Image (tube, rainbow, N blue to C red; front, top):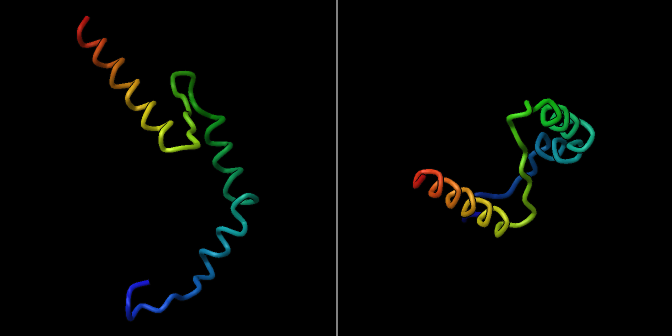
Length: 67
């Protein structure tokens, strides 16, 4: 925390984190299950995976623009 800004407990945020798996996650799962066939969900577990994915998209786009 910055000087002069005491840290405080935000009960709403704590409740959100505590109940995420039970209340929020099912909403996300339902949303992603409803994706159209032309939509896709890509999940990364590391920043390097995201970087590699974006680089591969850029390479694909470059190849498509050349042809």
